[in-house]
Length: 221
View 1 (cartoon, rainbow, N blue to C red):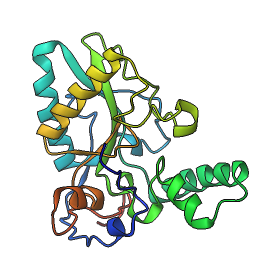
View 2 (cartoon, rainbow, N blue to C red; view 1 turned 30 degrees about the horizontal axis):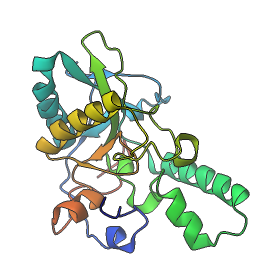
View 3 (cartoon, helix red, strand yellow; view 1 turned 90 degrees about the horizontal axis):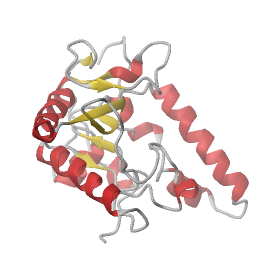
């Protein structure tokens, strides 16, 4: 398996952002995606994505329909303040469990599961956490629960983990094939996390700049 580039890698932060000004849109408006409410917040920020990301998800879903399957959207946009809170909470857990770790090691380990706030794809409206569902909306087996951290899952949250069953492996491969075909990239420590247009996407695809930078939901781009 190729070495995983973590979100904390300086190469990610070094990617410039050429903000395209594309709006955040509510993915629930036209009903083209199944939306799960487990991550719903008071402002309904979770249900928003940049327009270009939504269109690519719809394209990916079209590839699933002949098999009677659909994408199940769980979380998209995450306000910068919430992203920071998530990151610090997980970093604090790692510090408590590993008091001998350096600050750099904590930063890198935390970024396996939560992106550092300054470069987080979710805060740019560029990332989505999602899974597969059948025609009745029931989630398929993808090996772990969504948002299982590396400690809880013994690393099975990694997209190419060996310690999952054959059915889960096949489902991950199917999810990956349709999303990759639509132009999204995966963060390989989280099978459910896919993005387009952010710094990580730009680095992984060789683009010169990201299309989307951090954004407030109701404020200017």
